[in-house]
Length: 504
Image (cartoon, rainbow, N blue to C red):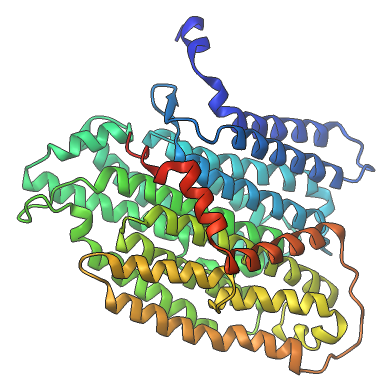
C-alpha cells in the first residue's frame, strides 16, 4: 500500500479508536517510567479522560452515512455507533468503580496494568462493533478476550483469582477454536473474509452439501460465541470467574464484555446466515429454519440461570447466574428476529448496563467494608446507609423487571418482539415469564436482608466520590428510562435510521 492510498482513507471515522489507543500507549509509558511511590490511581483518571474524549468524538460522528475504510474491513454505520455508545458509557462507569477499588492482595503493584488492560479490552470490543471482515472481527475478539483473561487473574496472591483465570483461559481457548473453525468453513465456501461479500456469495449457493456445511459453520460459530456470552450449556465458567475476579473486572465482564458478544453475534449471524436459503424450504432463510434450536438454548439458559441462582449465598455468584439468565432473555431477542431486533437489543443492553453496574458499585462497597461476599453482609443496610439500600433496591427491582424501571420496559420490548413475529413464540415467552417470576425469589432475598434483617454491627459507610457518581448516574438512568423510555427510543430512531444501513 503506497502513501497516497494510505492518506486517501477517511481516518476520521476511527477517531474514537485512535483516542483509546493513544490512552493505552500513554498509560503504559507513564506506568513504566513513573516512580513506584506515585499513586497509580492517577492513571485511572487519565484513562477515564481518554474514554470521555472517545465518547465525545463518537457523538460528533452520529448522523454520518455508512462509511468504510481499509478495504471494507472497518465500517462506521448506525449499528456501530449505537453500540459503541453503550460500550464507552459502560467502560467509563467501570473505570469509576475501578478507581475506588481497594484490595488486600497487593493489587497496587499492578494497578497501572489494571487500567490499560481495561482500555485494551474496550478497544477490542469497539473494533468488533465496526468490523466488516472476519479477520478484524477475530482480532477484536481476541484483544478483548486476552485482556480479560489477564484482568481476571491480576490478583496474583489470591488463589481464587488464579483458579478463575485458569478456568477462563481454558474455556476461552475452547470457544475460540470453535469460532475460528466455523469461520474457516464460511471462508472456504465463499472465498472471501468480507462480511458483505460473504452475504452475496452464500445467496448463490444452491448445492445441498454446501448448505449443510454452512449449517455446521453456523453451529460452530454460535457455540463458540455462546461460551463468551455464558449461555447454557456453556455457562460453567461464569460463576467461578465472577467470584474470583476483582469486582470491577466482574462488572466489566457482565456488561461490556456481554454487550460485545451480542454485537458479534448480530454482525455475523444477521449478515452472513440470514440470507442463506434452506434446502427444501424455498426462499426461507436458513436462520429462520434454525430458530427452534436458538429457542431451546434461550429457554435452557433462562431456566438454568434463574433456578441455580436460588441456592447461591455468595453475592457475586448470585449475580453471575443472574447474568446467565439475562443472556437468555437477550437470546430471545435474537431468536425472534423481529423487525425491532436492533432497537430491542440496544435498549435492553443499555438498561442492563445501568442497573447492573449500579448494583456492582454497591456490592464492591459493602463487600470491601465487610471483608466477605456473603449475602448476609447486606443485613441491615437500610439502617446503616439508607441511600445505598434504596438504590440497590431500585437496581434489583429493575433486574427483576418490576414496572417503573428500565428493566421492565426492556423485558416488555422482548415480549412484544417475540409475539409480533410469525409464527409467534408463545412457548418461549411463557418460559421467560415463568423464569422471571422465579428470579423474584433470589432478588427479593437480597432486599429482605437489607430491609428486614438486623445489622451485626452499626458501621457507617463512607461513599467514595467515584462510586457515588456511578450509583447516582445509574439510579437516575434506571428510573428515567423506566418512566420515560421514549427518550432513549426516540433518540435511537431519530439518529440511527432504524439501522437501515446495516446491510449496505
